Image 1 (cartoon, rainbow over the protein chains, first blue to last red):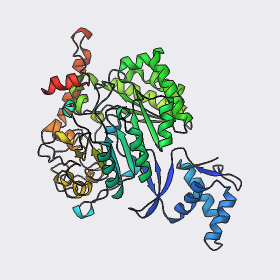
Image 2: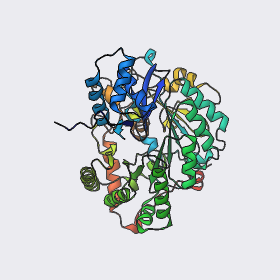
Image 3: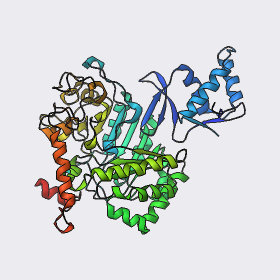
Length: 94
Length: 394
């Protein structure tokens, strides 16, 4: 079992050289990085948009998402996503 | 060109190609070859041999118009290359505007002509990424390692890149004359605190093709270099990422050139010619549409050039019935033409190609050249306007 990188107090930030933006031509959110692009699905876009716009802890991020999504129980999904995104080199803890 | 940018597959931006014309995808990658002017004379450059015939580069406004059109069609990545893009006096303006349009801007440079204040200025303009290519020649690398002024300049420049919050991406173009210095190359990268190192093998177009006999590495050299690269990859894990690309002449299958013809990649040359592949100017029967005469949309979607090798209908055997055709698209059309005389043939790098022997012959010619005593060896022809004019009769 790999030790998780993020906990409630960590502050996730985009990795060096990564940029989040909405692409009108594709009608989706994307992550841009040196010479490449990742098209994001809805959930990944919601999380990464918040990470790119504001520095906050994971617990604050989850609280914000809960407000936006009617109190949905999304803690585990967010943690799972953050670890995946870290393993893909998209984000890192500040 | 100052690096391997011209030969690089467009990363993860690609994907599978549609097989019919009504599935034409948008251009995602715009490679703007801003200029053929370059302070270096790398004999492995993939610029065309006759680059000196290009007298008039696109103006600032013409480039910005190209950027706007490509961006509106959905392009996200902009490569600024050349030649040496730093020789364009309007580079900062081009970057500023491109960034405002929403491009992810990549500067591909030798770093010659750059200093700390220039890096800061580029950062201010919104430049997203700088790739610095090292080693104009083996002599140059030797100078670097020997600690000359150039080396000090590179160190300062590399530090400035990091100090401005960029990841440091170094590119080394390898060939027979420098590939035995793999340890020195990687130690230099470690000393510079690089984040990414690309060990890009020379690809044989333009000047590199002209100098192929002197540049093709020997198999023993490659095996050694590869072992060194893999050892450093292990040692540097989590610290510095090393990308090592095997030269296609030593592969059994061709590269998926440009991720498919007219699929994601659009190159615009200094004079405004739009190309689906950087060596496509050399192919017979090309109409060579120019951005000064046609819209990017008309070029991308409507021109014969960009439709010519889309999909699979143009293929001949063995590609046509090959179950790997959707993976590599039959390789590079330009290489197929250069080496077999017909751009619809399989790239002869493929071991299934009936022309594969031309690759073996090229390697053999390279070996014979390498075994000659130094006094009889063919000199490298350096990429400069004088040689361009002389060789091409301009």
